Image 1 (cartoon, rainbow, N blue to C red):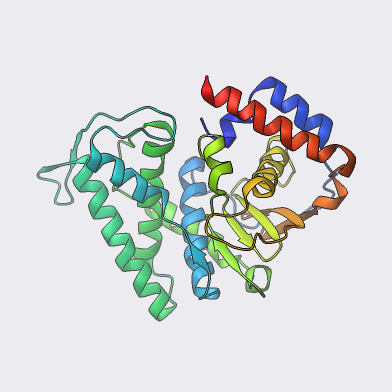
Image 2: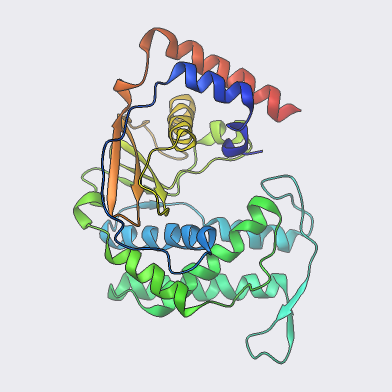
Length: 295
């Protein structure tokens, strides 16, 4: 279970549609960074990592949470811990970096994370986005599906120059003014007991009063599923706030950063929430999540 899968339940979709009227998005722009391959999911996850690296450099006081990739290594070391989807992955052998020998999945994951931490530390010190940092973002993204879906990427550890070039064009579009925090910046935050209520939920970013999701898609449009995800994060925040952050910050906006367009679309939550029914919706959400997760 996770927030994403919880939101796929038919009755949950229907209730979200009834409670939150999705605002129209009228923005029209030309794509600035067209995809260079069909590895859409990999590039999307890798850019999530790379953008968060950049935002930590831009906002040195940003609060960070552990990478999903680190949870993969924890689970592999514990030999039998569940993934987010309550499945587990059989240990496999993968080609080593020298191409002439094999290493275990655990050894490969450990190498990826250690290398990524070294590249990340160097970046925070020097402020230069190197190809090595981008490659580490891609390798971390290859680990994420092990945790989220119990799937091992057959190319784990290998990266394509095409993908490095794609990520470089995406990061070059980021405007610092859109992400420079005036109060706080939270990278990959979770929502305490509320995240556990749905079996796992981590937002991409919280900057000042906005919860922001990153979408690396070639389409500039607000999908209903995107909107439901944003409002799901908002509800989780209203239930329990952000892990480790006291007092609970006031969230007034949710938004999507469309990375291939360099565009941040923000929605004022006051324009979509019905005060007369929202408290009742939150109570229903909690009860329904407990029912689904218990099953």
